[in-house]
Image 1 (spheres, rainbow, N blue to C red):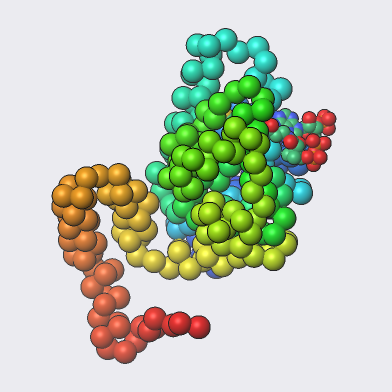
Image 2: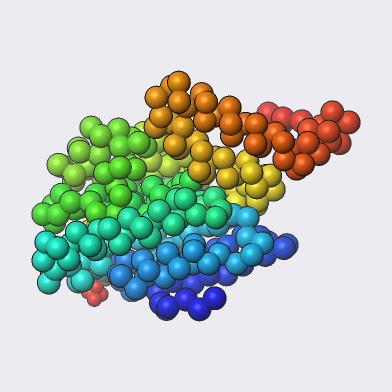
Length: 262
Ligand code: 1HE
C-alpha cells in the first residue's frame, strides 16, 4: 500500500509479520502532525495489510510527538478550523475503531495533538523520559483531535482542565499514577515493551480483541441495563467461535497455560 507522506512509515514485524510498527518520522519538527501525516495515518489503518494482528505507534528522535503542526494553523478561518478538526476526528477514529489493537510507545514530549493521538490507542507505554501536556491552553486554542472526549475518560475532566488552565506538565511516574499511561518503563525501553505487549495481544482470539476494541468502550458508555445486554450478546458471539471452543478445550485437557502470577 503506498503511504502518501514521508513523515510516517509502516513496517511489518514478528515471525508472521503480524505486528505493524508505525513510526512518526519527522524528528526535526519533533514529529509535529501536519495534515499529510494525519491523512497517511488514516490510510494506514484503513488499508492495514492482511495478517496484521496488532500495531505499535512510536516516534523517531527524542520525542513521541509535539502535537499539531502549528505552522499550518495560522491562515485558517472558523469554517476551515471546524473541518480540520473533523478531519482529525475521522482519522483518529480509524485508529481507535480500526482493525487491530494499538499500543503507543511514548517517550519525551507527548503533548497537544500528540497526547490526543496517544489517548486514541488502546494501551500506552511510557518510558521515564515521557512528559504529558496540553499547551493548547497557552496557545489560545482548544483541543481538536478528540482530546476533550478521550482524555477525560482517562484522567477526568478536572485534571484535563487543570492541564489546559495552568499548563501543568505530568512527568511519566505521575502520569502513570493518574492513568495517562498504563505502563511505566525505564528510559529507552518503551518500544521494546510495546512490542512485547503487541506480540501478546496478537496471540488472542481475534474476536476477543474485537470485543475489547469495539464493544467494551461502547458498553462502558451505556446505561447499565443496556450494557448488560450488549455484554451478553458479545459474550455469546465470542463463545460460539470455534477459536474459543478449541482454547477452552486445550485448557481443560491441560494443554494451555495457567494464569501465571509471576
Ligand atoms: C514545531 C512544533 C509544532 C516543534 N509545530 N513546529 N504543540 C505545542 O505547542 C508544542 C510545541 N513544541 C514544543 O514545546 C517543543 O518543540 C518540544 C517540547 C516538543 C520539544 O522541544 P525541543 O527543544 O526538543 O525542540 P524545539 O527546538 O522546540 O523544536 C525543534 C523544531 O521543531 C523547531 O523548528 P526549527 O525550524 O526552529 O528547527 C520547532 O519550531 C519545531 N516544532 N513543535 C510546528 N507543534 C488537533 S488540535 C491539536 C492542537 C495542538 O496540538 S496545540 C499544541 C501544539
